[in-house]
Structures are given as C-alpha cells and as structure tokens.
Image 1 (spheres, rainbow, N blue to C red):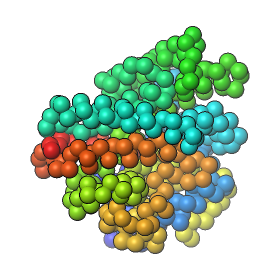
Image 2 (cartoon, helix red, strand yellow; image 1 turned 120 degrees about the horizontal axis):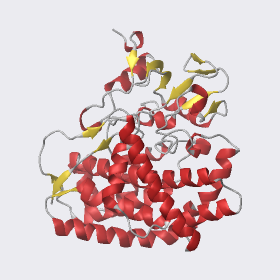
Image 3 (spheres, one colour; image 1 turned 180 degrees about the vertical axis):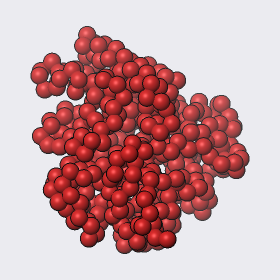
Length: 400
C-alpha cells in the first residue's frame, strides 16, 4: 500500500537513535506533499523535499502567522508556546520585534561574547570531569553549559538549573504533559522572568533583558511583547543548543571513524558542526516551521489553497538526495553540508544561529580534547521525548 493512499497521523515515530521517520523517504518518492492529521485534529500539508521547503520558507505567499489556520497552541492566557512569538509573525510586526534584539546577535557582539562562552565551557567541563566518569552528558554538561550562556546573554546572574530544566521538559511536551502541567510550568517561568525584568528596571546593564526594558520604556514594545521576547530568548537559547550538543555527541560516538578524525584534527570542527546540523533531526516534526498559504500555491504539483497550513520537517529536506550526495551518510568532511536549512530560510532564519554555532564549536572542541575515548556506558535504548517540537534525548550516560 502506498503511504499516499492512507490517512496519515502526524508526527511519525522516529527511527532508532532519533533518525528521521522512515515515512519521510517514502513520501519524498511517492507523495512529496501530502495531507496529515495532527494530534490536535488539524489537517495540514506535510512537505518532504528540499526545494519545497525552500519555497515555504522564503516565498511571500506563505505566512508564518499560524493563527490564520487555527494552529496556534496556547497554554493559559499568560503564555504562548506558538502564538504570540515573533517567530510566527509577518512583517512589519516581525521586523519591529526582531530589530530590538538583533544587536545582541551581530558578528561584532558575538566576537566579544566568544571569550565568555569559552570561559563558561571551561568551568562546565571541569565540573563534569570531577563528577565522573561516568556522567550524564545532558543533565550534567550540555544543559548547564547552554543555560549559563543564555543567562549571561540575557543578564541573569544566577541560573536556576533545576527549575529551568523542568520548564524545558514540560512546556513543549504537547503530547505528554497535561494542559494543567504545561500552564503551571509556563506560569512559573513567566514569574521568574518578570522578576528578572524588574531587576533591570532598577539595575540596568548591557544585556538583552535591559534592552527589552528600555524598548518598553521608549514605547517600542508593549509589556506583553517584552515578556514574550524574554521567554522566547530564554527558552530557545538553552533548548536547541542542548539538543544539538547531545545529538551531535551521540552521532560522533556512533561513527567512530568520524570521531577519530575530529580528535586527530580539531580544524574539522566547523565541518563537524555543519554536518551535525544537517544530519540531526533538530527541527522535530516541522511545526516550528509551519506556514499558512495566503493565496493558492502549487508545490510538487499539489495545489495548496489559501488558508491551508503546511509543515516542513527540515530534517526531511536536509536528507533529500536531490540536494545532498548520499544524504544518509554522516560525513564531517562533506562539502555540501553548509547548504542545509536546519536554521530555516528567509526572513525567519533563526536569529540565534550564530550563537548556536559558537556554542557547538566550543563544546565539540572541548569534548575532542578532553574525552577522546568517550563512549556510552550501556547499549540500552535511549529515552526520547516525541512531541510536536524538536525531539530530545532525555539522558545520555557516557564514560571516558
């Protein structure tokens, strides 16, 4: 039976080790644009080719305002997981909000921040080393590292690791946590960030939260917009890099030839980072890259009507053989890895992409220098979170 002839419920279950669901490759051949049903009951179009994903990400006939298709997911009146984020806005609102935080992601500012990231990494890796071996790379290294970097960028003095990780586990788990649990975690996170913003009103510094407060005081942002931006920067700044460091480490452990090459030549770290971004299932199901057609658009011969939604799992695009040679081969020396679209495309290209790359380079250089013999402590199945947002490894126990 052809997949295209079935009623498909989405998201699909990933293959072992977090590899893309087998349905992506089959659909790319049989029906590259096909209707699927979300857990919420919404019917949307699923796109699985590189070419179509580029179109959805950059064609002005597609809007990122998912409210237009009724896809907004909210958790209580005070917190929006999808709706209310400038990730899901169109110009001019998107441009106005992005402009406020853009100065903290310029090459000049990030060059200044790189030394701090290195310093934070030194402390985190020293502590991880002192605790083991063995150790949980997620909870004892990757998460504390990315959280501290995020807190430094925002201007939060003391990172509450335990509470922050709890929020990161519950809030995006739209298929595992109850609405009440998500709302409670979201409310706690909001109270925490409101308190941090209040500090900046009396003790301004050269940091992102102070910039948000200043923008509100000058009339550029509303109070709600300030809180939404603070939540997005706090949440995305720790969640995505943690996921990438963890997935990247697992990939390198599972490909010992690639790991040996990196350990022998640290100049390969840039290529390793780009290949991890291309190869990893970083965008989850594609809901974070959902879009709505504002007029009829044809993708791979399929007519998308105005008002219909499209989801683009970027991992499907990044494994498209029409764009990447042997796309299912993990190779840190490949020359086409930089064509990946793990950070999206067009005006909604991920603002934090340069910061994520800095953290990944620092993390993998440290791993290669300090733990060339790193390996998993057991071969039991990993525990994954499988949700509408990026899938994450909950725990990765390693020794060295």
